[in-house]
Image (cartoon, rainbow, N blue to C red; front, side, top):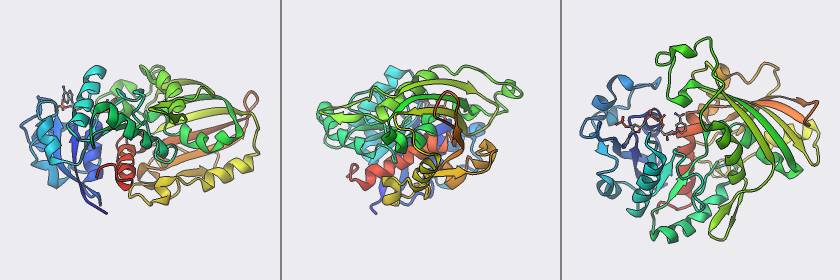
Length: 359
Ligand SMILES: NC(=O)c1ccc[n+]([C@@H]2O[C@H](COP(=O)([O-])OP(=O)(O)OC[C@H]3O[C@@H](n4cnc5c(N)ncnc54)[C@H](OP(=O)(O)O)[C@@H]3O)[C@@H](O)[C@H]2O)c1
């Protein structure tokens, strides 16, 4: 496979650090540029992050002495050094939209973890096992932007990364209604137990904007390309409640679902067992071998025990059973900063590379 030079925009942040650790030994991608805000620009990665390093593994040696660029002022320079960038920055939405478009227009493709472009009509929002075909909209986007190779592709919000994979292969039974309550880890808020001691022995029943994302984003992921845009599907009806819980990593969802044609439980279990997407068929380096793991034990999946399954890229499901109001209910879990953030971004980039979008 061809080797690609990549940049990390927002390298000093929680998601950026995760990108750095995932890319340090990547077989296809080599980190050639790191960038962050003007506060960090000009410092080495080690100096800029200093006591903010939040990963369980040490900072990659190869990156410690790399000097950070200014993500905005140095766009042309960075675009000249890399084949594409990963982007995860904490800025205002309209600033992020503009920043990502500037990279794309500088002919530098952007694989983004930010939400700013998730509902731009010709920007694909991709879970690689679920809607890999949506990347075909990139040709329309390039026409709009007037670019030859520049484009923006995004990944979806971490909250939907467990239940959308589990429900996607069941859509053929005509999903009518979905109710999902999510129990989300504190790393999703960029926090640890040290930086957020008040979350210990506590639960916060509100995560700003999360319920809207959790209800709207699946409809775009399940949508289809029509002309120059991706049109969201208008069903099923989805309602959610999103809670912050005292868990370091791993978002759990309690899901209820009704179908037009209710399948037998054994058929659902078989479908999950057999579910393979394009990443598994192409054997992409970050793809889990078994995308959906079903646990027979009543007390699984558990965040602490199961979030790291297949390097945090698999989805764990358990407790599938009939319900009194819906047809079925079950529990699912995915690692929010791996599959739900940087890992999902790396897998999307691998899909784009395998399909020739960075050439
Ligand atoms: N945490 C998660 O699990 C998660 C999951 C999915 C998506 N996301 C999204 O990913 C993005 C980053 O999240 P995070 O948790 O990594 O945030 P974070 O830890 O606060 O890091 C923010 C990053 O943005 C950079 N930045 C801030 N202002 C900037 C500016 N004016 N110009 C250029 N860079 C700037 C920071 O650089 P300095 O260090 O120089 O300030 C830092 O590298 C957000 O859009 C978030 O919604 C996060």
